[in-house]
Image (cartoon, rainbow, N blue to C red; front, side, top):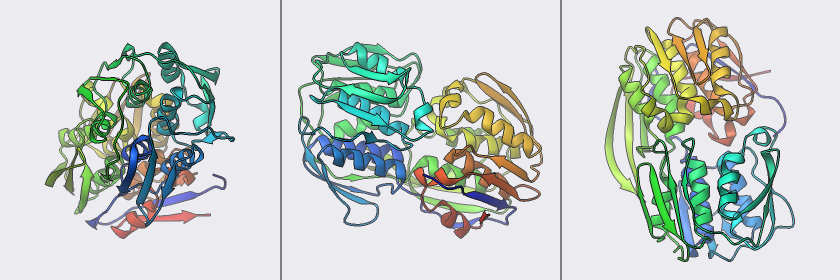
Amino acid sequence: MSGRLDWRSGPAGPLRGSVGVPGDKSVSHRALMFAALADGRSRIRGFLEGEDTRATAVVLQQLGVRIETPADGERVVHGVGLHGLRASAQPLDCGNAGTGMRLLAGLLAGQVFDSTLIGDASLSKRPMRRVTDPLAAMGARIDTQDGLPPLVVRGGQRLHGIRYELPVASAQVKSALLLAGLYAEGETEVIEPHPTRDYTERMLAAFGWPIAFEPGRAKLSGGHALRATDVDVPADFSSAAFFLVAAGIVPGSELRLPAVGLNPRRTGLLEALRLMGADIRIENEKNSGGEPVGDLVVRHAPLHGVELPEALVPDMIDEFPALFVAAAAAKGRTVIRGAAELRVKESDRLATMATGLRTLGITVDETPDGATIHGGTLAGGTVESLTDHRIAMSFAVAGLAAQAPVRINDCRHVATSFPGFMALANGCGFALDVVG
């Protein structure tokens, strides 16, 4: 994506209304992949119309899968079966999607043809050895550029199941190994130091693949088939996070966020905010396609700093930029430890958030695996997003509670995870606009 896009977020009055955030990105990626490998036709509703998920759809189409778009947020996938993918003459462009690239590496490791996975400038700097090394232990052959993309996945390899203990908890790595395990001889078992999101496990079961899983462990064997099934994608908790924090820090606010995915491996921020004194309740809870969903109702409440339990870190790894803003607006200090993975996301999110908050007058003491944020009064100023979509949206939230407008430079990647963010935000009371 080219061209620069800068935002200005100003102080705002109470936020009100119902905010329908887009579909879950993680579920949308996986629904496409499993539907493509299934026998039969699957319909996906609530699909996230973001650049990352669309990139995954294009890759699958390059591999010979027919995907129709009958309406916005809907896909009909004509599955080709586990062994029905075809080689692509062109590289497979994952755009900015780390989830897409890492999961596809596992999926393509079991094919009979070679594939090349490429990405944009940001994705091309993200480490891939933590997924390519365990895949190699299963028999895969994947060439990297000194551990970075592009990835050249060599086809025709005989894969075998392994028992793998992840050195660092990662749902993406776990999912890549399970996808390769579909094609492997014997049993593939993944053990995690901390439980991570189990979207892949739940969806494999929904598509009819025998799998045993519990928090921190998943096990399956090859030699089965996936059956087409319809998927209703819940609203993305990571997208809802910005509105949870916004309503929490702007006096007089009350927002309803309907049908949000409440997978327990995803909602660490919900617990963290409640520990800080946030007023968030869950209504209309139900189960949809193996995933728990519910309406979140958040009201403004004074927040106070906390020592974040490390057990929550894996369940909120994408929500830390929003938590930093909540901590900045809270009374007292918030201590974060055990979050070193934030340094290898779309940007070094620890450093980028710490630098931005300091610019806005907040004291932040950075450590290798976290930070101590001293809550205070947010001033106006200019911050850099470094093209990181979650950083950009988090500082848009910070501007609501600042004493003067906050300018956020280079927000063009927000569309990767949250298309239509500005319109939705302004519709409930944000004061957000584009600056030249």
